[in-house]
Length: 582
Image 1 (cartoon, rainbow, N blue to C red):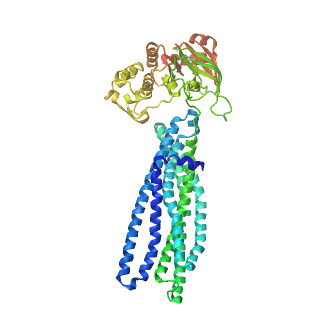
Image 2 (cartoon, rainbow, N blue to C red):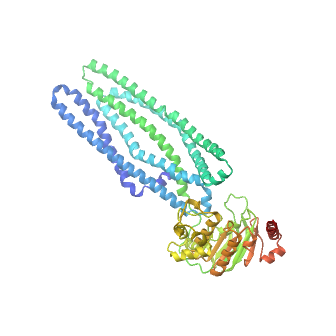
Image 3 (tube, one colour):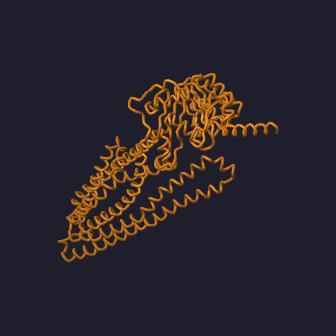
């Protein structure tokens, strides 16, 4: 019921077509079940001349037209309601994902979210359309057809009651057998989509290592698994039609035999030829409805699994929300960590950050270095509340980050992540992600500060140069400079560069840092880097090790007392000297 209620909330403005479709279905079913009755009267009175033919013929024509129009309107409204529901579900899921914190995003794989927003929503759409049409039509058809058959001749109609349980049991057994394969196929879809996304995203690596054949084999395996599940399911479903057709023709033969005998023995007083024809027609309607019911059960069972997966996304509430009347102004870029510890989930065996005590004054330039896995990126992701601290307190501008309005806090913090992404569009459009209302002069100015203007001006279309999806048509260093420019356009109180100059040469790196030092002196600047040269002129340098602050000080102080820092510096300096000697 919870799943149905959650999915039902997305019907919204499509409630009217969702109601109109079943209403027209009722009209269509009534017409279809009355037509055999009228046809029987036409057959029985055919010998009385043309008047009965014209009379009943006109009635049949009117009923056929009414059935046709009702069916068309039902199909139209059902399609509108179902496609509207799918559109709303996709929007609701997408909007929910946009509100997720990093913690919630970590709980779903990208491929799984894609499958849920495409295949699963399509399954629910098809099921909803079938429910408001078929699931209404089928039981009504059974009820009305049974009623009309019993009104004609209850003795012959009892044949239906004998056949329906047998047919129903066979069809539901088919559905029961086929459902495990459909359930498993969703997990196969996730794996297949993950393989596609991984391959496309890393296509340059694949080609550089000449592993196309391996990737083809891996993908073929996923495709084969999906295919095998559906083949097994379809083999079982293939029994549906022959079982139904055998049942229909068997019932028709039985009804024809008993009915013919009854007509002859009673000289058409208990049963007429027209009534026998109508009973045979009702047999087709009843058993056809049973067949449709089995298909509806398969579709609904598939959609229930899809609906559960959709509901998981819609039910996931972000753990990071803006408080009521949250603080909307960040006074300055001062950052204070007070005994902060953090772990990614409650199930994590240990903290990613442990007992962090750190004060960064507004306008300071702070460098952070450390080995892989030392939680450098984790530390700075707490500042704009991409994650929330597990223990302790984190303040920005003298206010606990949990007390800020999220939009205001994140507007005051520009974070250039390690793996930044450019979006499809022009260079200018990508830069304006930092401020959509920025003038052309402001865009050009931040590009100059990030030393991106020099290569942009060399492009034929300049700032109107089209960027392919993911920034695949620019180099790594160019992408990083564009991302820095985008961050600077926000005019943040805090600027965080998470290894964001690793792809640029040391000269450009130094020029970028010089420009930031001179142009935005009041902005707090945090630079995570692997190269000592990128942070050696910082006001202070933090050395991270195993989720803790190992040491902190200026470049000269750390060289004297911090073994980790000294080893990194000497290894990089030695490597540079050897390179220069060569």
